[in-house]
Amino acid sequence: MWLGIDDTDSREGMCTTHLACDIIKALNEDGMDIIGMPRLVRLNPNIPWKTRGNGAIAIQFGRGGGRRTEIGYVEGKRYCYEKKISDGKTEPEKVLERIDKIVRKRAMMESEQTNPGLVVIEKKPPYSLYRKAVRSVVEINDIKNVLDEMGALYIPYKNGRGLIGASAAVSWRPRDRTYEIITYRNGGERWVDEESVKRMDRKFKKTFDNYDYINRHVQIMPNSPCPVMYGIRGDDYQELREAMEYVVSGKIKRWMIFETNQATDEHLNRRKIGEVVAYESVIVTGEVCREPRTIEGGHVIFSLCDGNEIECAAYEPTKSFRNLVRRLRKGDRVTVYGGVRDKPRTINIEKIEIHSLAEVYKKKENPICTKCGKHMKSVGKGKGYRCIKCGTTAKEEDATFEKVERGIKPGFYEVDVVARRHLSKPLKRFKPSPDRY
Image 1 (cartoon, rainbow, N blue to C red):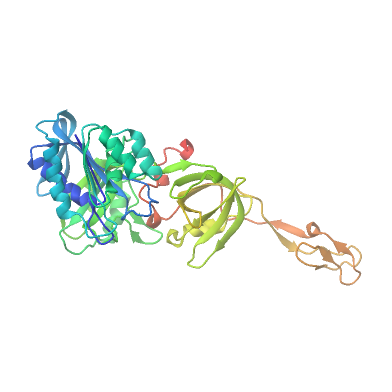
Image 2 (cartoon, helix red, strand yellow):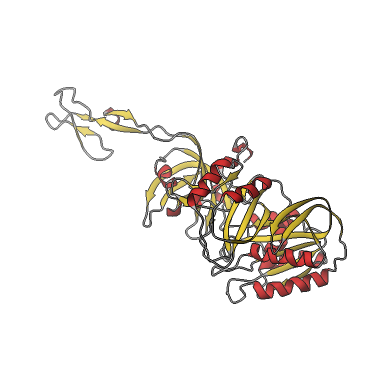
């Protein structure tokens, strides 16, 4: 059996992963084992009605067998099993009833944007459900039709939009995966020692996005009013447990390891510019056709063309990444990765690959009059030159030019760690190159 849950948090507090810990504890108390690791599945990051990180939870349960792995501590050690032997004494209706009580007690129902969904289902929905939910917009009625056809049990709370994420999380079949160990505070102050995070980051090479050395920011610690103390992400779940021991922080009440789709770029669709639609995340290739400009707020905007045109933005939170974007010039050929804003239609850049750079020249000196031997004066922008003594004229290209060193080179570039989105794959994880796109 699979259980999916989503949209229990709000911008004011709570965390669906924290509720997942309560669910795992309850399932264990009712004699059920956790099969495989609990899953934290991030979905389309551009959905305007999401609460915070748009993450849903999926848990497989039943009677476990094979290797047992410690995955957390929630009022005692918690384990998962390598495989499912049987459903055991599982009664789906009773499971739904049990988890429903937890959801009603813990979810932030008073928040207008919190609309939980709970699903208990025997078989995984088709993978296409996850793929659509991570890359575009899904209608809740479409989800209900799938669940009804599969005989699933489900509860839509309020407008029930959480059913979308809950069902999509269960339908995820990992092609690429990462892990996150999440620690939770005991209701006290959230604090993490900065130097301990740096030491951890240097030692554990399979972790990523722990610390932003450019902006001196502890990335593992959230800013929201949720129960999380910190979370460490990496490619090896066994390394995460040891990495946790290196971090000095406030008192930790519980912790849990999740298998995730974070840092996989599974949200991205390759598109031509004319095919780009709002709320998707896209990969588009073209030439810079309008050079970068800085607008109010410190955001840097340029236009990309492939026959059609779209604006691309390095917003202020991307920090030093904007300096790279400011060096782009007309004629540069690039590929942009990012989420699509509706109005104005703009790509919020997550990564950029520079394929080739246009040659840029600047004027070194005006033409010299062949009769008088004196430098000519400009007649006006694009209108050429004239000798003020004898009236001889010259063209714009008759001036002396020198090639400008651009200060950038072809290659892949990404936003600062502090601005990294959950699903965006850091360059550290490319093996060996991003050619698969």
